[in-house]
Length: 298
Image 1 (tube, rainbow, N blue to C red):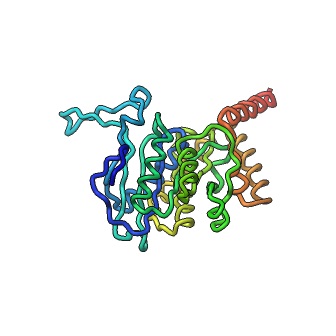
Image 2: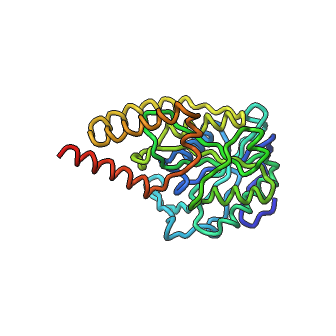
Image 3: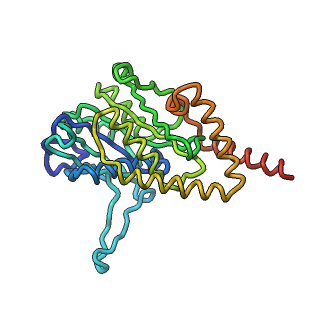
């Protein structure tokens, strides 16, 4: 295997592989997509077989290396990198997975995406799936909607996916899917909607919803029992915290009413998965709502 941007230790022996990627950073609201991919990694027994050349793609002032202590004595540097793991021998009912994880690159997104597509071809990957999560005006107390989009018209028709209607800034996943389309590689993007009023709280329910949609799409079964337990704890803790804040509780109630109203008219994933509201718009909406609440109380 020759790929100037990828260091490969060995070529894994895979059957009908699917390449699944998730990047931390802009594409990973509430850590949902990276949590979903790490769950696959932990439950599948996938092993590392390579990584991308970090110095080609990272600004180390923006994405800094970390100093770690080894056995409490030796200091070691951990450099940011995009890592490749894979299962072998048809681990998932006759199918394998290639897992691409790590921070969103800072530089050369086109070159990075070209390298991913080249690697997928070399490994005979049948499909590329990216996992992502976005902040949206959705309540934590309702089912997480996951939009499955594709730029491939055949996939959109065959799998009944939604053609994306989003316009605006994009991340590495958007560039990767564009390159996949140009190269004729089938690709699907899964995006979970997470509550914008909980941006710093890792969302196990969103990660769980992503994996359920991934299984529905690819037939790849993932053990999500640990995520299910964590999701229950998440709902209890967040609901208790929201109830202690009267303004936030009122705001969530408004979101619940809106969700229920739209969900009764259409599929929730369609209602909430097509259009992405910007972070600034969400912040303005929340501030306006809380200001109106304060005015009503005076």
